[in-house]
Image: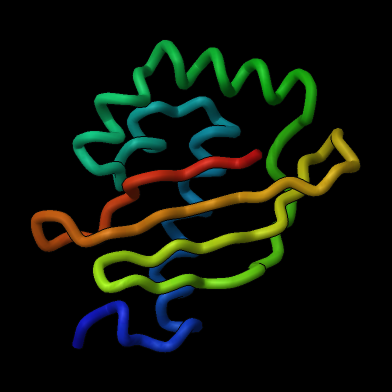
Length: 116
């Protein structure tokens, strides 16, 4: 079955562990674990030095990732994009967490991810 034809909860069961890993690896500043599901292009973009600088910077101001609440799953012909409200441990503001997944070389890969 095409993974994009799965129910929202089935797609979420694929995406949630990926997003959980990304956030925990970011909290731990563990580059290798953070990029394990990245596409080759994402691995070229997110360097270890840049990753460490970004983590230290946001952790100082916002704290660590806290809970998130699913806002929706958007499917296209070749990919899925997931959106969550995201909170941090220090900041009282709401943020938008975004995960863009696509099959590459037979595996589901992260082709874009952000929290803004």
